[in-house]
Image (tube, rainbow, N blue to C red; front, side, top):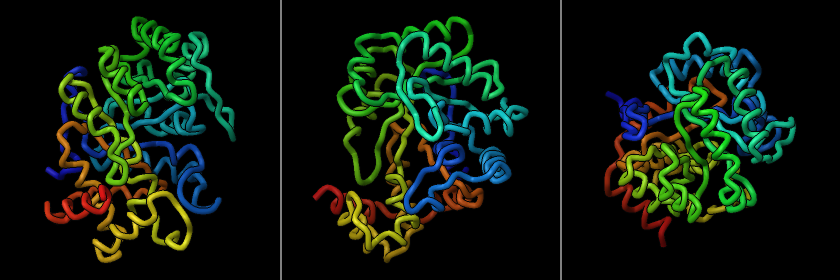
Length: 303
């Protein structure tokens, strides 16, 4: 069994997800490192090819959001006939108003958003609905309208499990609340601030999906054309590249295997506009990365 396709159980859901999941942001919304062309979402045909490749290669988790513009619609269009093959996670609270998004966490807005997501995704039920936190997260938690709307949709059979995409102390608060089955956390070799939250989720049987596992491309070959530009963590990225001999793909292998070694992580959500990149990421997880190399990488990022 390849590491990427290893299934890790989420006790609170009674189901397992592949270690490599698919983050569907880039197939619906312009995103990524670089200029406009590099950031541009794929056309319809390419998006369909990416989505089918995800399932053809054995990945069983797809994560999207209403804020990802065309993403939900494209998943519905291309994968509704294969709905039984994957666990579907989406988000509410941040809404699409292309080319922009806006936040509305009110009960009514969230209930209507869930119905729109069901329609766009062409499904009767969404496996995991997550709160897509943004500004004023504390206020959203205190008011409780978003969670109330999600719970009512759950009672109506529209969603199965509840999740939240948030970091830091507020993530800890939601983990401790016992209301959520899955937490989506930002975590990677360059930013390990959610480490305690991951351990807490493991203790409580809560699923952990990792976003930004490759630091929005900084821990991949996509960073190579941008090394003369200024960006966050540049000094550490350059040192890590030196450690792997300047090989961008080996940097990805290092970043993914750092995450793989954490038993509290159920799935790492990796997105792409290129179908061939999905197979490459599966293969990179099989690359030989020694404990010694990971230890040296940790010394670089934690100094």
